[in-house]
Image (cartoon, rainbow, N blue to C red; front, side, top):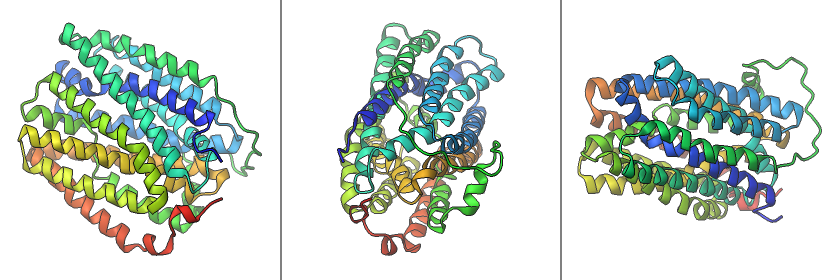
Length: 398
């Protein structure tokens, strides 16, 4: 099977355009929110709530996609909602409206995530999962390089003109939606569902899922409980003395490292095993957060953002590939959606908790707590027998 198929290319380009739109705004979002009166704590609550709403929708729409054996309509609707959310942010500065606009964006991600990852999984086999998901993450993240770079260029000529950036971000969002219409669904037999699917039906999958799936997801969720929004990393860079231009610049640097290494690390993961690569990523993450908690040196922080790019490349696509490898093909969207739903719930707690710790104890304690918790997650994965029981994915061809 050819690893990078036409469908993988289209999905990757759609993700590139969407991330270009989203990430054009992401590094300036905390700066913009603070400029209209949001506190650090309120930013943490906002980010956590919108992620929780989006996450729950991932479980529901993932199961709905499996039950109807349809992927493309969910992908198209999801990317469309994310596109229209961009100009919405420019209309009003009322906190409730900002919450609604951010929720629309994340709801779009919730609708498309399970279906999109199921499409990617269906285009490959277990021997090439890391390569395909790594390629998708590379393309996706190149959008996160282009988007902030355009934002940086625009703000150079029009300092603090954040409002017009929300309108500009609408353009690549529309390109993503147009590209999504090139996708075609494969003919698959729908899964018979005895009970009517409701918003929380995905919880039933957790109860009947393989024990291996539950063990893996529990470890991933514990890590997610302490892995707060990247907004806090940007705020740390700001606290260390970087101006707005440098904050956006360092975010571009992180995404460039991520984009350049996701594909080769994904390919290498197929050779050594997805689990080993994921563990390597967690080790890098813990070192980065220990460093963030112990230094305010600008050069050190730049080096730590490099490490953070390596961590993301070694874990983001890899965790999705791992989950699709331990779930049945007909339940792929449900398995990914269920994990993503629970992940988003704990991400809400993580962001709120990080905001509280930062508010009462400062940034150093926030990062050190996360680093220590990550060490515990590493010990869990090492002690759970994953590396003894499960052979490398290269030996598990479908």
